[in-house]
Image (cartoon, rainbow, N blue to C red):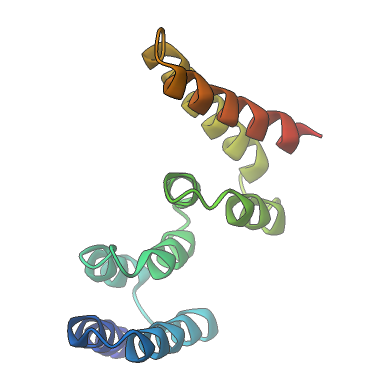
Length: 139
């Protein structure tokens, strides 16, 4: 219930177009999500997902609360937050082999870009990027 009020506050702040108000509202919901556990993460994540365009970090936090680690890692990668993905996986390394899952995601992205990029230099560059991310992670 309280979590939904925080989400509604973020939506109102986003609609106001005042970036500082939105920044403050997002900080408040982050504090709430990190400091409390008396909410239904599954229910709240459904609500936050509707506003993922400006609540990505909050959605990832809720995915983690729901133990949907693969999806959280994928969101980090899709948002090009590679350092955050690695920090998250290292911080939670004891959970389900997250660093291995991140490595698998990098290889999967490499394979997808490689297969699409037969004659496309941009796709080859993307494939090489993910290959390098994987190599760096293995060091």
